[in-house]
Image 1: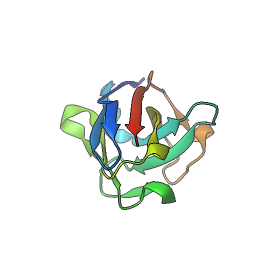
Image 2: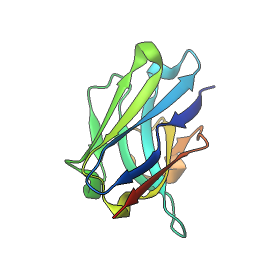
Image 3: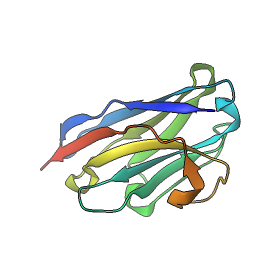
Length: 123
């Protein structure tokens, strides 16, 4: 079973950058596709980005395309989310999770959620 812990959140001004990390435990980490979701206050958790097990394929929600980059280092059991040109609308708690359904953006297709890391973008 894979467990994940997110880190790297914080307070940043609009236009700034942050890099989130998702450290996973479990020897099977490199066999799973991974994804990032976010949840703003009063809103549902929404898909942000995902990466396949090899790190050779990724996909994103439209609102972050060109600004966010997901990557992974299987030797370190870690997935990253590089966030550039941050906007106030990016303010949310960010979560990572595993999936057996690479290509999906559905919350129900992801699991082993971490506790999340808060990202706050000031305008």
